[in-house]
Each structure stands twice: as C-alpha cells, then as structure tokens.
Amino acid sequence: MLNKTLHITNGDCTTNYLKKLQVKGKIITWREMLCQGKTLTDVGSEKFWNTRFHFFKNSYNVSKEMFINLTLKEYRSLCNTKNSKEIVLWFEHDLFCQINMLAILSWLKKHRKGHTIFLVCSGKIKGSDKMFSLTDLSENQILEHYKNKIQLDQNDIEYADYIWQLYCSNSPLRLETVNNFKPNKAFKYLVDALNVHLKRFPSVENGLNNTENFILETANNYTFSTKKQFITKLLELQQVFGFGDIQYETAINNLNNAFDSINPTKLSKRGKELLINETNYYRELRSDNSYLGGSKKYSFLYSNVSEKLLQITN
Image 1: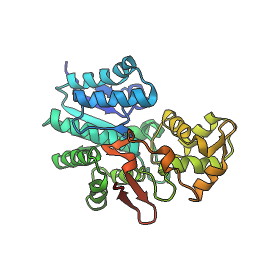
Image 2: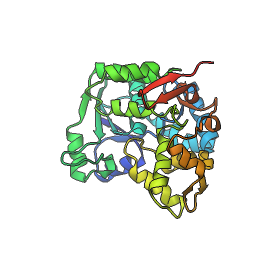
Image 3: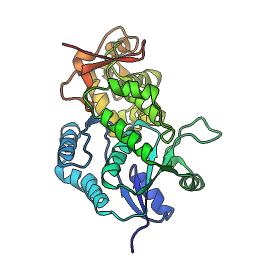
Image 4: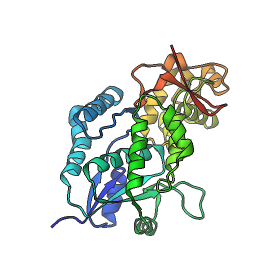
C-alpha cells in the first residue's frame, strides 16, 4: 500500500517527535547544513554530493561511511519515494532550516513535478515574543501547525528555486537586491534568514561576521567555567542561526587569539579590542577555501553602517 503522505523533516528531533505523535505517512530526515560550505545548484547530483562530502570531511572530519549512512541513505530513500499523494516539509524559521528548505524545494521542482507540496514552519506563536522550534511546540501546537499547513503553488516553488540559484551563485550581491524588494508571502521567515546570511560575510568594522561577533559578545557578557557551558549558552541565546554545538565549537577554535582561555572562558586583550572595533581579524581568518553558498566568504565585506555588501576587488 502506498503512503499517501511523505514528510521531509529538518532533523532527527522533529522526526522522532512526529513518530511519537503517530503522524501518518513516511518520514525522511534531511541531514544537511547547506548554510555552511560550498553549495551547487543541482541538488542531488553526483557533483553536488561530492562537493558536500569534501566540505564535511575537511571541516568536521566526517568519514565517507558516516556521510553515506547519515545523509545519502536518507536522500536515496527520498529518490525512491515517488508516488506519495502529498509532500509535507517540516522546517523552522532560522537560517539553518531556511537554506535547507530552499534546496529541497529546488530538488522537488525538478524531480516531483505535479506533486502537492505543503510547508509546516515554526517560529512565532501568538502571545509570545519567543521564536519556537518545532520541538519547542506542545503536542497540540504542532498538530495545529500541521492542520494549518501552507500549500505551496507553482509560483512559490519557482521563487524558492530562484533564491536557491542566487544563494549558489558566485556573488551574493543579487541575493541582497532580491531579498530587499521581492519577498514571498508563503515563506514569511525567509527575508530575515537571508538578511542573517548576508551578514555572515566579514564585516568592514572588525573582519568578523555576525556569528563570530555573537560569540565574542556572549563571552564578554557572561561567565563560563567550561567551554561546554559557553556553547550551551550560545545555543540558548541564538534565535536566527539555528546552529548546533559542532558549528559553534569550530567557530570558537577559529577565534583562538581572541581568548586568553576557554576553560574558564576569558577574552584576551585582542578579543576585547575586536568587540569595540579597535582591531581587525580579517587577515587571520581569511581563506580562499571558505564558502557561503556559492560565494567565497572573504571576497566580500559587510558594512554595518550602510547595511550593504561590498565586493573586494584585486
């Protein structure tokens, strides 16, 4: 018997929650973080997955066996599930989820033409200023979200695919322009997520991006006796990034000169100077192999004064 509904989730926590709630249909977990590392437009192609594996191997020491078992097996399951009556995407408001969502919609546009596609997206809840993840929701709240899922029309899917193409291009400048003038009502958190993405390019002011500055500000504002406590606080305070502990640990390690110690966490003189823009960290961090989407991270600078991206020319 065919599954009438295919659910594609943003991670194992959501998958397990849906299984606990006994939501009907087949569930596939999208285990990727396309907000980091180089991406290519043709989602699912051999070149796409080779590029992604090399990123994970070089940045996070992920073995080929782990990559196959955690990511490619779920993707192959997606490829083999062709006859579902409807496809439901379960994603959240943050940058991490929104970029993955764009990629999946680009893939669905090409490989699942004519299928009915819905989106369940968590974020704002009436009566609260907090941004909620899917697993933050109560059982009644998540089922209510499911009941009120948004059906995406062809224009929505075309729009998502277009933004994905821009995200994978070698320049973020067009993405900046489109993001300012062509919002899409179906994706109510996408504009904010893309603004966060654009600020991930190093700043003119101190050479650090929004994530790196957030790390230093948190270290300066709180006291931590261990790195674990530090990362736990970063995960608690973040609202827009959606990163996990491994992303923050890597970023902290890259900022080693900004700290006198990590256990306990203590900023160095250099770290304090970075916070007030009295020094610049661009040279220490610069790498030709560091990408955000299809763009080289250190070929662009973000000005917090003008709130615009600038391209570095040789």
